[in-house]
Image (cartoon, rainbow, N blue to C red; front, side, top):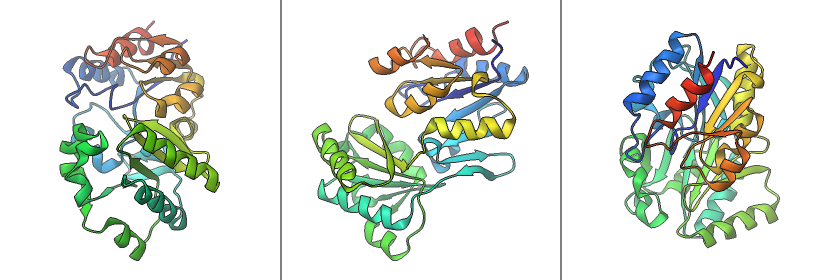
Length: 274
């Protein structure tokens, strides 16, 4: 099978623990692009959280961002596909986050958080993201009040909890309320929320249609639960060596971990294989 596209998750996949792209991964991406293959970022991050990577990845044009809710053409600077949640729904999610003393985050093209939460991110098990939020997130003094005053449609709503148990409480509340959303676990205690029917797999399908490709032409590489939708529809599902057990069981094949150029292995072994 001659694959035409590889979709790479970011955190825990393309990026190592220092949130860096290794030289080995960078070289493999460059070779793939030179051979006419599509290399796509397949991420839960929004565009503002990707700015430090977009200009250094050779030949990068397409991003499947905010967990499939915004597929973006970097060259034309326009959305290929976009699916947002309405303000009424976002206000309900704010309430659930407040009830659990959790940290909400809005992601569209930009990222928004409450300044007080940013200052104590370690309490929500996401201290490793603080350097990214320092430049990528807009920090508001009274986040919820300011959103309610000037509401807008939102592609993704993250809720970072203090404990796994607290996350389960929020998930049950959302399910009992019958909110039309998709939910996925990410990080240690976070809940990622997108519009009903939206996940990374949907975004990749929209991009593939745009490019005239079949999903059988696509390799997906990931490590966490929010990659499941994409892995399920991929022509080849690849799990990182550091992936969760369920992801490894779901995948067709496995490569080494994110500290040892797992994405480069996937590119050379499967995307560029003769």
